[in-house]
Length: 134
Image 1 (cartoon, rainbow, N blue to C red):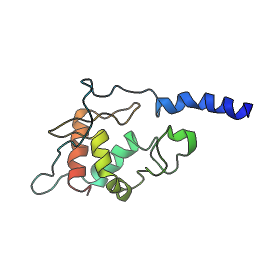
Image 2: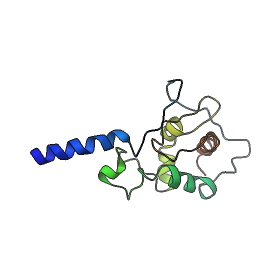
Image 3: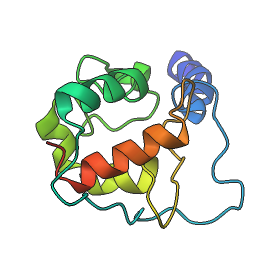
Image 4: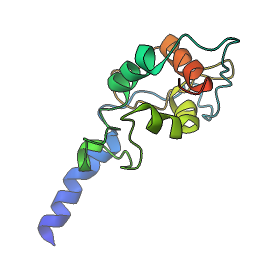
């Protein structure tokens, strides 16, 4: 019991960090929600190959890859993995509400550690998701 309690005590601060040092949430304290991003007429120039793969490798898969397990996920649910475009499409609404940008809002809750995408990258994510993550 004593050893398990000590391990839990040591692991708790890591879980609270959520994949490294936390970055600030929206400065105005506004609730996160849909970005209102839309797909441009004629579709997006962004594809999984030209945008999505690199975006998710850079900003998401540190915690949200199937190869990351246990405490190394820093609290990311094991059911939320973004290894491929199909797994991203399945969580598109949630991703939009936590990490994307559009005309209604810029959501910055994810990622919770550095590096973080800039607003232009978040707008690209919103557009790509709104187009169905082609």
